[in-house]
Image (cartoon, rainbow, N blue to C red):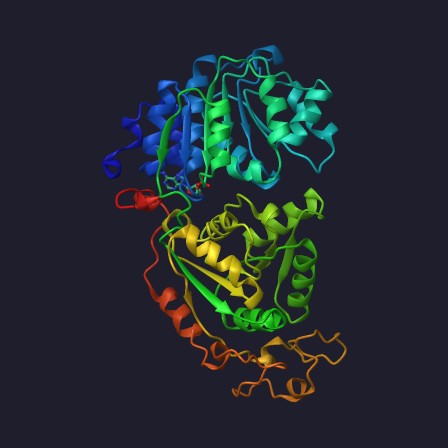
Length: 464
Ligand code: AMP
């Protein structure tokens, strides 16, 4: 049924439809087709949608439509009180959500603004003071503004909690409670979450009133457009394997996840040393550095972005072809979020996870959560790949290239160099076939990102 729905049959105003046409959207995605009429009807909503399903428009469009009767060009800030509040767990997601809101509201006088931490609060205050109808915020910075009395929330009619599961994971519950206590009791609540844990259900019980429940994909499901693979590898061999993989890959953009900020920094430096344009994005970087790294990655000047979970949450990068889990997450839901960075908007993607024997237990949890086994591929590590472009004797040898046998190897040689400590696990002794598998993925016809896309986004709806 959802496939035949058109945007103009959802009761959206011409100004919004025009903006959708400008954005190249023709057909609503399943989450949009379901959420928009329900949200327009005015009730609370609890929506389960994985990343990349078009969930931002699913809440932003009805929200804008409901505010349209109040839209005005008045100069006085009093004419533009905050009427819709969208809370997101991370700065990057907040920025992206507000960009979308702005794009959808471009033919209306409605104003939007994003506020997030990590930048000087004084730069945000003047914009807030001019008045905005739609405020996108991370909880901590919003509380700072509340304390400084630079924002009033007593006219909020609509609250959106985006990626609510992640907000709980990140410990935002106390902040959320403080914020929610300041909002008018009479309001509409729209909650979006990629996963439905018991904690999320409790949050919904606490804050939503008789919510309609919609789900476009099985809870905790991963996107069918993404080919998932596990490469079993010793922790100490991961860097060499990564370099080998990146050097053999045609992917123009690869997002790599690490567990810690230190690993993210170290890895991006190691990659840069061997001539791979890489940057890192994590919580210790300033907001400006994070935005710069993200922009370079989006523009293609950096082919590799190494990120921690928090920093990468909610990133929407068009056509990201490959995600690599350098370390798999201990929280299985994070796996779903991470690989949701690829295969977006109907495109095909590859998600590769490096799994050391110590991480096997996390893999078991992930497979349980996504209710499928991820196929394993064995890779023999070619240590010559881990050497610098120029084999620079000046560059500091990393632990993966310290082996003198490896250092003497001709880079053009095809013969494999044995790992320093060969694994006794037979997995590691089988031939490497990954390049073939990757090629097959690359050879599949790519699906265009626009019109037919919508039917595919969240397309698990019918049969899962
Ligand atoms: P989201 O899940 O909101 O992050 O959206 C994922 C991507 O899908 C974004 O790049 C959107 O611009 C795109 N998108 C959202 N809705 C549609 C639609 N109806 N048709 C085509 N692309 C869409």
